[in-house]
Structure formats: C-alpha cells, structure tokens
Length: 221
Image (tube, one colour):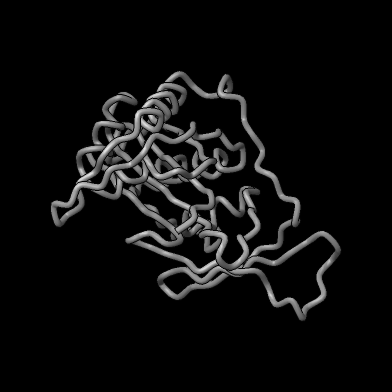
C-alpha cells in the first residue's frame, strides 16, 4: 500500500505564489485575474469574480466510502492531533472546524482519481493535459477559483493527499497519520474547503483503490 502527499502554496513539497493581476489592466467589472507561479517555475493565471464563493456539495451525494473518509477526517480535525516531522520534532495541532465539502473540488478530485485509473499511474502530476497537470490547476479548471487574499491577510493553500491500495477509510487515515509528517499535517491544518473521493482500480492497474483528498483555504501565517 502506498500513500503520497502534495501541497501547493506554502507547503514543503511544491509551492506556488498567488497574487492578484496587474491593476493597470482594465478588467470586466466584478472580475479579477489571479496569477500563480508554482514551485517548479511554471506559471498560469485564472479569472474569477471578486465575489467568488465556494459551492457546497451535499454529503448525501457521496458514496459510502467517501462519506466514511470525510467523517473520519472531520473526527480527527475535531479532536486535534500531533505529527512528528523528519527531525523528530512533534507538532501539535489544535482542533479545528469540519472540512466543508466543495462541489468543484470534488469534481477535480474525482477526475484525477479516474485519470489515474484510466492511465494506470499513481502520481499528483497528470502529464496528459497541462491544464490538469497539478492539483491547483485541476481545482481551478473544475471551477474552484478563489480570490487571492490581500497582502498580509494570509496565504492561499491548495493541497492534495493520495493513497493507493487501502480498502477502507480507516486504513487511509491511519496511513496518512503514521507514514509521513506531511500526510499527517494535511489532516489537521485549518483549511476550510475540500473533497474526498475513491475510485476502484480495474484489471491491469497497479492498485485496487485510488483515494484522493483535496483541500484549500486561507491560513494566516
């Protein structure tokens, strides 16, 4: 069984700089351009409305396994927890609110899980389409287009955790809590919006199940 983590914007493995567009460029009323530079040097931008609001998805629309994973993650968040980094330092995380299920992020998570099954790969990077290459690009393309916070008002995070082969939500959460600091940290940091999904593999795939957790939100640093 294998677990993989990726953080976008301010995280240890892959980061991005997010800012509002050039204010000297006249944009349609009520719209703003968000510029993104990812850690590998690639850049892209997206246009969104200044009054963008996340779209919530009813938990009742999740599969039983997806609902179980969301419930387990929210249980961890409600209790708070601790994670040990590679240097042996223990980081304690206070309890935080539930992860709100966001419809566009769910589309991105579901799409990537299915793409991994269809393409028989297990990675955060989808090389088949530049607009789907990273978790941040996938969430934006799916319609999750938040406005960048003003300078000094925190950082916008997009994060993704993957797990492969586990049969149940409990096994996934246990793996994320114990196999790496970054997987563990992703459970407890107070990002408000996200989605979980699982897609069963098929004959010829490396793994029997493909699990995805995508989260996003603003954190004051």
